[in-house]
Length: 103
Image (cartoon, rainbow, N blue to C red; front, side, top):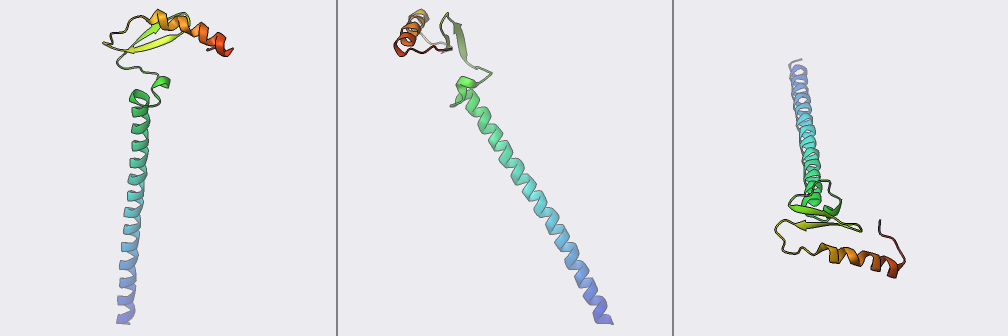
C-alpha cells in the first residue's frame, strides 16, 4: 500500500511539472511570435521611411514637395538643384514618344 501512495505522489509530481513546462513553453512561443511580428512591423516602417517603399510612404521626412503641372517632385532638404521646370517640360515629350500618359 505504501508503494501505491508513493506511486501516485510521483505521478502527481510529474503531472504538475509537465503542466508547468507546458505553460512555460506556450509563453515562449508567444514571445517568439510577438518578437517576429514586432521585427516585421519595424522592417515595414523602416522601408516606408528610408527604403524601397519610400515612394509609397504617407509621411515624407526630410524632403520638400514641388507640385508642377505634369509632375510632383520631392527634393531632399538642402539640395542645390532648383530648376524643376526643366524636368517638368520633359514629361510631355516622353509621353508623346511612348504614346502613354503618366497619371
